[in-house]
Amino acid sequence: MSYAIQTNLTVDQQYQGLLERAMISTVTTLSCCVFLCINGTMLFTLRSKLVFCETSRYILLCNLLFADTVQLVQSQVLYLLAAYHIKLTYLVCGVLIMLATLTNVISPLTLVVMSLERYVAVCYPLRHATIITIRNTGLAICVVWTFSSLNVLVRIVLLLFFLFENLQSLQMNDFCSNLALLLGSLSDLYDKAYTCFLFISATVAITSSYIGVLVAARSASTDKASARKTRSTLLLHLVQLGLSLSSALFNPILISLSRIVTRIVFMRIYNVFYVCVIMFPRCLSSLIYGLRDQTIRPVLMYHMCCGLKLLRRS
Image (tube, rainbow, N blue to C red; front, top):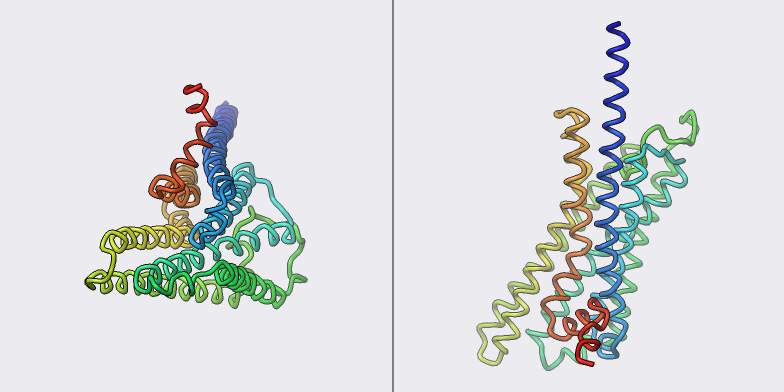
């Protein structure tokens, strides 16, 4: 009798857990679709006008948005795979994780280039048009993608040092994640060292640009309004960098929490962290630039409203 009651309780708990997973995954997927619509509209806006295609900061913003959008799609795919306990092979998981690693590195590097562009605009306004050209901007983007690709290549080489023959099967025992592919101590050490180097370097570069703008703002020849707006932009870049760093610390924090709380509480914390730390920062660039930039805002609002203003006027 007690065994039957215990079995029924277990079945009920499993059903409730499955129902909760289905509800939460539906909410996160709908939220992801909203963010993707916003990012997609912003990307379309940046390609709809010639001024956006011929201005360096908008080209850099487009690169940042593209990387964030790809990262958002890839993160949601991994989230759904984990939520429904779908296990992949190491090969398929490796492709997904390396794609995520590529786009994840592009975001902070692009923020650095955008900060340097704003620094040159304020501190060297007469040379800005000479230094920040379309050609140099394209070259900077190529350097960013090359540097990110080299990081992925190094990680692949480190994985090759791990003897896959020691595995009983190429089928993964757990869900696909970045930590699941840190199969050797060397890969783990490189991951931590590279993450620290990347974010320390990016923080120093953006902070230095901010200090340079502060110093330049005291000069009588500097446009005070432009310097004030640039300071605000650089501070926002630091916030974006901090959010990117928080996403890099996402897995270590969850590992620590998994040792303290129960599995049900852990999954609920995981869902909150995922929305706040992974999803929302990927849409932050669209919200920041779409609402602050006087050139982008009217075009973006037109596309977001699907031309309702013109229909009402007519």
